[in-house]
Structure formats: structure tokens, C-alpha cells
Length: 225
Ligand code: C5P
Image (cartoon, rainbow, N blue to C red; front, top):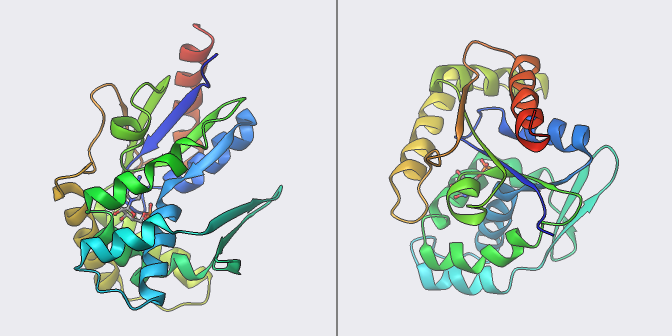
């Protein structure tokens, strides 16, 4: 029997991480945060001082990646070579490096089997850029969650300030636009909605409303209501 999969793709800061987490909890399904795998690979490259312009050097790192996710009820600890890097991989330098190595087709294909392995019973919520287009094209239900770059920058500045980190709105907005550009314009698995994805724009609605729209669609598709 095939494992039911829901994919949630979208640009950085669209809220897909939060939504995917809430949905996987609600359904009691596994969760794949595919961005964290690209971030882990990028961090491994940075730690080994790899030239990020060198695809073959990045591929060697991707092929030897030693990563682990320790899932508890309330959190996920992310380990690289047994070191807890849960917060380090969230830094913007790591995000930008991830976006750079994620443009390499050989790196993407080296990281594919590790992502597919998350498809286990009772089901999977997969969050990323190409979940519905490349990794799980046969998913039962696909969402593309987006929001304007300004809204996403606002949210990021607020999130950083809650963590006690001062951030400049214009700098955050520029970084978001740059990462969007890189992710949307690469040749290999660019960020774009799958043809059969349901588009959800969260620019003017909150998390609860986004979740409600998704749950309505999930009930309709998974229970044929
Ligand atoms: O989602 P997150 O911001 O953690 O992802 C970091 C980067 O990893 C993205 O900007 C993107 O370039 C890359 N990525 C990807 N494909 C995915 C998930 C993330 O290319 N499925």
C-alpha cells in the first residue's frame, strides 16, 4: 500500500515550516523538512571550507553526509557528524549557502534518496521547494504556500526580534528577494507550483486560516468528502 503524502512547497518565510509541523501533528504523520537537509549539506561544506562555486566538491560532501534527526514530542534535534546544529543551520549565511549548493543537479540527486526515505506509514507531510514537482510527484495532495516578499520580511524581522536579535527590515527583504531569485531561476528543480498544486497566499491571512483551508482540502481528498 502506498503511503499518503501531502506536499507543501513555497518560498522562504511563507510559513510552510510552521504549517507543515502543525499538520503533521494534527494527522499524526511523519514530517520532512527538506530545507534542513540542504542546510546541513551547506553547513558541512562551510565547515570543510569547500568552495561553494565548485559543484564536484559540494557533491563529495553531499555523498558522505552524516546527518540525523532526533524527533521528540516537542522538538527536532538536528545532528551533523553527531554535533547538534539545530540552531546553527537556521542562520542566514547557511540558508544562502544552501540555496547555492541546491542549484547543483548532482547535489540534488545525491540528496534525493534521503528525502524519499521519510515516506513511511501512516503518512508524510513534506515541506520544501520541489516536493510536489520532483521528489513526490504522485503525492495525494499538493499545496503551494506563498506570501508577498514584504510580508515575509516583516514576519522574519518580528521572529528575530522575539529571539532578541535586532534585524534591519531592508536587509532582510533584500536577502529574501535574492534567495527567491536563486531558487526560482535555477535550472534544476526550480521553485514553482506543481501543475496540480493548490495555491494558498498567506499575505493577508493568519496561520489558523491557512491551516483551515488546508484541512478542508485534506478532508475532501483523503476521505473523498
Ligand atoms: O526551506 P529552507 O529555507 O530551509 O531551505 C533552504 C534552501 O534550501 C532554500 O533556499 C533552497 O535553495 C534549498 N531547498 C531546495 N529544495 C528543497 C528545500 C530547500 O532547493 N526541497
